[in-house]
Length: 287
Ligand code: C2E
Ligand code: MG
Ligand code: MG
Ligand code: MG
Image (tube, rainbow, N blue to C red):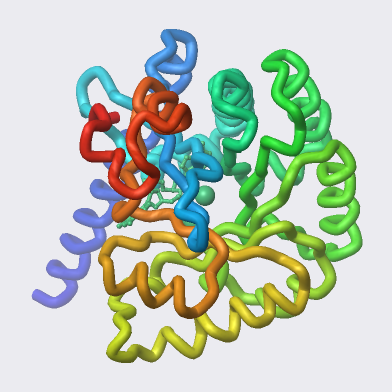
C-alpha cells in the first residue's frame, strides 16, 4: 500500500510540476505579446523627505494587466521575465518610459527605476541609460537606479567597476531591500551607493513602543551616515512607524502613509504640488 501511495504521490507531483511549467510558459508567451501590444504600464510611488515633508521623487513600478488573468504582481512576472530573458526588453521599456515621464515633472522631483540583476550584469546597461536620458531630455542626476544585493556580482572588482561606470554617467545608485540579503555590510564600505533603502520587513511591526527591529534600523542609519549615504525607510504605513523612522534619522520615506503607487496622471499632479506631500494622495486616481 505504501508503495502504491508513494507512486501516486510521485505522479501527483509530476503532473503538478508539469502544470506549473505550462503556466510559466504561457505567462512567458503572454508577456512577449503584452510587450508588443503595450499592455504594461508604470505606477509611481511618492518618496518624501523626512524633515521638510517635500516630495523628492517617485519610484517607478511596473504593472501588467493580463487580458485574462487581470492585474498581475511584478513579484510573479518579473522572475519569469528574468529567466526567459524578456527582462532586457521589459527593463528597457521601463527605463525609457520612466525617464520620459520624469522629464515632465518639476526639476526637484526625480525618478527611481528598478534594475534586475540580469540587466545589471549586462554590458549594454550604460548605453541604454545614456540613450534613455538623452531621448527623454532628462538630466542624469534626476535618475536613480535601484539594485538589490542579488545584483552584486560575486566579483567585487567587477561590481565596483560597473557601479563606477553608471555613476560616471551622473545617475544615482540605490541599494534596494537592504538587510534581506547576505553580504550587506561588507559591500557597503567598498561600493559607493548614494542611498540605502531599508527593507520594509524592518519597518513592519515597528512601533515607538519598541521592537527588535529598532536597533537594526538604528545601526543601518548610523552606518549609512558614516559612509555618507542617505537612507529611505520603505513600507511606512502608520503614524507610529512614521514618527519612529523620523526619530531614528531616516532621510526619506516611502510607504502607503504618503501614497500608494499611482498612475502617471496622479503622479504629475502630485509633482506639480496640487495637494500637499503629506495628504495629497486622497484625491489620487487608482493606478
Ligand atoms: P521594490 O522595488 O522594493 O518596490 C517596493 C514595493 O513595496 C512595491 O511593490 C510597492 O508597491 C510596495 N510598497 C510600497 N509601500 C508599501 C507599504 O507601505 N506597505 C506595503 N505592504 N507595501 C508597500 P510592487 O510594486 O508589487 O513591486 C514588488 C517588487 O517587484 C519591487 O520591490 C521590485 O523588486 C519588483 N519590481 C517592480 N517594478 C519593477 C521593474 O520595473 N523592474 C524590475 N526589475 N523589478 C520591478
Ligand atoms: Mg525598488
Ligand atoms: Mg524595496
Ligand atoms: Mg522589494
